[in-house]
Length: 134
Image (cartoon, rainbow, N blue to C red):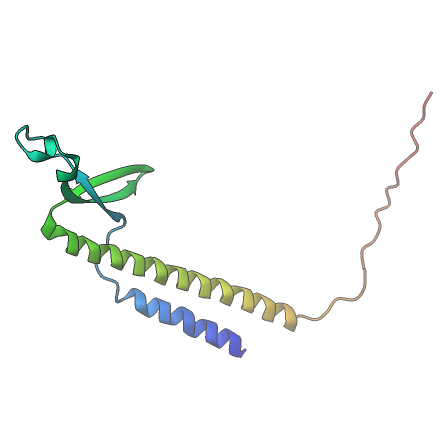
């Protein structure tokens, strides 16, 4: 019974943490170097002079979507991504505790049921009949 109480407490802690989750967004940030496309810019001729940037990538309906972020947006988006990772951790903890709780309750119920005696299966009256070859 103590195990069930611990599992209930773990599940309830995860449930309470759900209430603290704020805005979030899935995805990941990638740093990259790009050419700006201006013909007079030094990045047009020199690979080492390409411009640094940050891209948010995420999957939407099975397709990868990329969004270029401005410098001022990167830290805000990073916080939203961190909150999404925290959300996924809380969900995993809640599911694990709920699943373990369900299994513990099932085992407890089985242990409290009366044990059945030996094999009480009756054999069916049907027997295989020899096939006639002829």
